[in-house]
Image 1 (cartoon, rainbow over the protein chains, first blue to last red):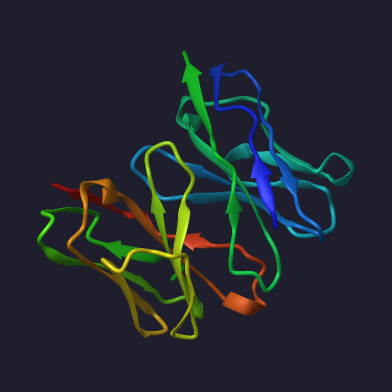
Image 2 (image 1 turned 60 degrees about the vertical axis):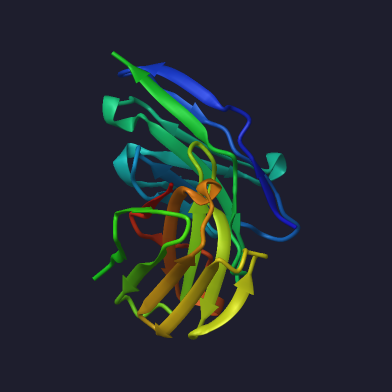
Length: 113
Length: 114
């Protein structure tokens, strides 16, 4: 069974500083990996996804993530954080022909001025 | 149209009420999902409909009753709920068994049970 671990429950970062959110997964085959963001009171928005190919993927809102098979990781990064990036971030792993998407516990990002 | 639309956005109901949540998509997706999400927690899968048939029920109590009248519409009927059922209910969709797992989420219906 697949599983996802987000080691950081809460991260506080200054506006303009860089951000990195960690995600480790466990899955027997090649995983499909996702990062979603959820602003307070909103639904989940897909930031980026990895299925195959280039291990560095670009997403929306200036985010990128790197797939490292050797480390079973899919960490999310942003070079310069904006106050609007304050939100809950969820890493998720899925697979072809599998309806179930396994979510990590989430990381809350707080942006200070 | 790349949206999943959920109504109502907010719902307050008593424990003896009967209400329904509605979800609609016009992306041609053949799989539709209900998730329940508590504050600061990840979404928890409740039900999956594939080609208008219930394919997954994650042992959800019978006070939650899903319905998929057609490939674009998904309902969640609520009856005799408990206060602990208060949560954000998210609908999602994708192409199903030929998909890559990517889900398209609605904005959610926030349910409060008094």
